[in-house]
Length: 226
Image (tube, rainbow, N blue to C red; front, side):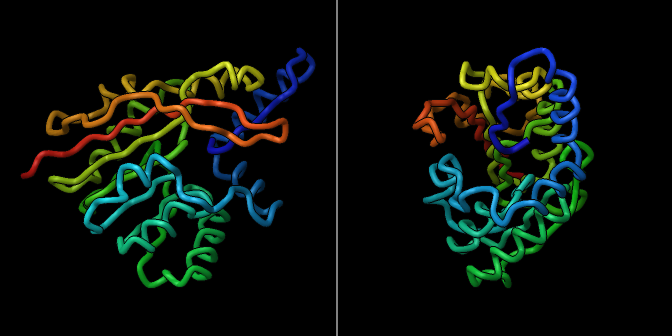
């Protein structure tokens, strides 16, 4: 789940909402959404990524749940060698188009993978980042553990998600349960990681009805040098 999906609040919609919500956690649900629209998000990089990586010396980066590739394009533009990973083939195809249009295709690779079963194997990156990836039923602790396994010694892990908030009261229950506070991810960090940032940060969302404040949960952690 990567957007803000508002649902009607009366009981008649609840079953349908739960089915729609369940689909948001599966590749086919995302393929369908991407196929139906020319552009889903703004293409701008996520502000927490810019805050964390803006002054880093570029190296290798992995963006898991990269969607349409706004963060991949930004990282490549900063000089990073980036792998964009997502479970939606349609999303990856769209991200590849955006990267090509921006002129950074030679710095970027793509990897179709589901974060819930993701295993980096021998691959390791200086920066592993994930924005608004929400696994159902508290599954983000396990996702955090899997993402941490892809971080090179001395590298950084950045996981950003939606904090539970009154702004999301219209969402189905399974969506709300997928939201998390930064501190709730700490059990997913292996022993050789040191937390750098564990906090909620305010962010303004631009809705049709006007700007609203929401909170991002931000976990930034550094892996010890080998």
